[in-house]
Length: 142
Length: 142
DNA sequence: TTAATTGCAAACATTTTGCAGGTTC
DNA sequence: GAACCTGCAAAATGTTTGCAATTAA
Image (tube, rainbow over all chains, first blue to last red; front, top):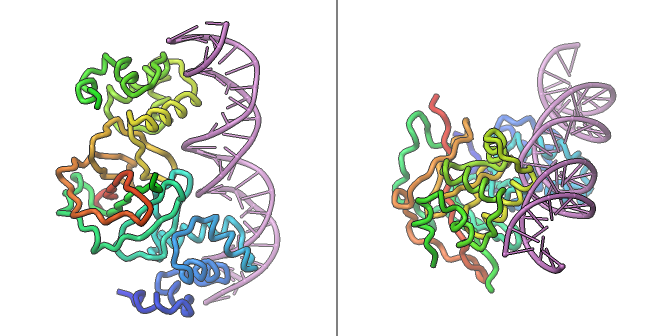
């Protein structure tokens, strides 16, 4: 299909990574991809923007939002919908799930092997499954 | 704990239902509860408002939002976070999961018995599990 | 009559959009 | 040079808040 698994390990080849997802690599897109793939953390659009600006990158807010949307649409990253107030983006697109800390807003991965679903129910008539998200909401103790 | 299972079947006793969740029953709250528990459907705040106004109820937008938030905080209903654009509220608080149709925005219940999770992973140190949500995103065929 | 609730409008936060100017192939 | 991308500011959502007026215990 593509060589993403290999490329994933080599953030230096961001240009090739973007291209393999049919995304024209531009200065801003490479900077945004760099933040995501070097940190390999879940981030909101605003966090990406802050990070970039702190590092001296010159990217506008609109471009960050539009670019993250594009990355997600192309399958390079994944949207994580856990907080009604903002979308998180996950550079890890392999099958996995999430802990979401309601107190801190922190997201943590759960490996697919650590959380198996027993036989998925059939999707409603006329529909096909597009993805399965499991979110375990946690709260700080006491 | 409470008699919600019984009360649930009797939307006429909405006053008692609210009281059993430590919610002072007011005209507006009863109207909002009526919409949710008579339809027994997932609804956004805006849908609740529309429904109410169409039925001639006089409730303000702020009150609908605040009331749904209160209901959820008290455990009478459940928030469903699947769409970055809006929160859905679910009058069914028993353990269950959801199909979410990306094309139509429709939410459908999945009975807990039809989707078992094989041994939940332990929550991160210092945290306790507050809830588990499984969302199966589906798309209309072809 | 005191506390709680409501409604309105304004405030907020996140995200999207229109469009002029720049960049890329 | 044609198509595409970026930045800015303005607009569009959905939701929250401040506060005066109203309602409930």
